[in-house]
Image (cartoon, rainbow, N blue to C red; front, side, top):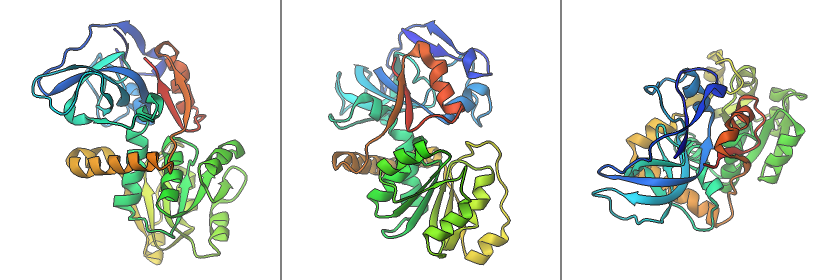
Length: 324
């Protein structure tokens, strides 16, 4: 089978498309014919050697995807060859096949295309965990989403609306904001041409926002936090814009505001039943047409440099996937 391999940590264009042996299922595992695999910003960090986890070399990157069960190992119950499943794994998704523990797969709705399912687990899983468990969002609250047209950002716009929030989409171009608007955003802010703090206060009539969803970091974090309302929650998702920001903590004190870390992966591993419940609720949102995962582009394995460039250049609107 064909697989994208990292043979040395470095720029993503040094990955190599190789022919390697087909996997075999071990005890408690299934082999999946991968139809689509989601590309995420952490994948870039892992390949570059900048992530907190460094897999032994060589390895096949990729942490999520969707496909068909091809083989079933000993001790696996509840699944059959041919089942449509999505999966979450540490590595291995950027290949035509991979073996994963059965506990890390889930069946998904028949009406959901593989490309959408491939990008559901991490971005929607992260965003839903952030809004539901970490921010405890309530209907009627105001949610500001930074990087609102990226993978997690666009998911959060949809989920915020599904949960009853007033959603303010914040992004760097009018094109991105138009997509966020199409996915349910009530208000938009172009923080390349508008002052983020001022506009957030204007839109909320001076009250400030209840929840800030921040996968961007850099200079945008403090600007947004200065517009947070009393008792507000600032969700720390990531730092796609580059620098990890520092906040003057007196701002949190004065507003009784919280800076809330969101590490979905560790939580999901430690709380499998709650994670499964979240995923089933996401499937329900999809069936009810409350979410519609936006696929920015689908690339074959030999076009991987183009797929990664969409993320590294912050060009992607929605989710980028590889189709082995």
